[in-house]
Length: 93
Image (cartoon, rainbow, N blue to C red):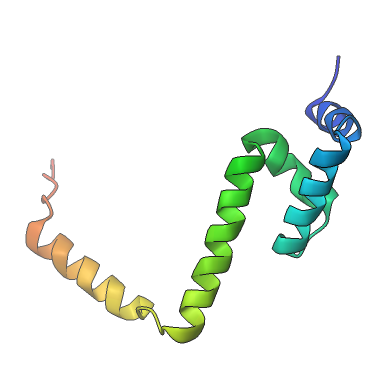
């Protein structure tokens, strides 16, 4: 009976030259190795993994020039919303 790791390893070994090159290219974008990236590609597919990597790169570039929102500020706003609109739990006693 094959384990998940054995199946993933066999699928990696069976990649075409084109798919292996694409995996290597994506791994370089992600700053990792092809072997470390392969489980995600095997599970989600090349297109979804590439989309995720490119979205991460885009977000990193955005936040180099934009500060973003402070976590303390966000949490205080969330707590205020919950306090104002959240349902109170009934206490049975």
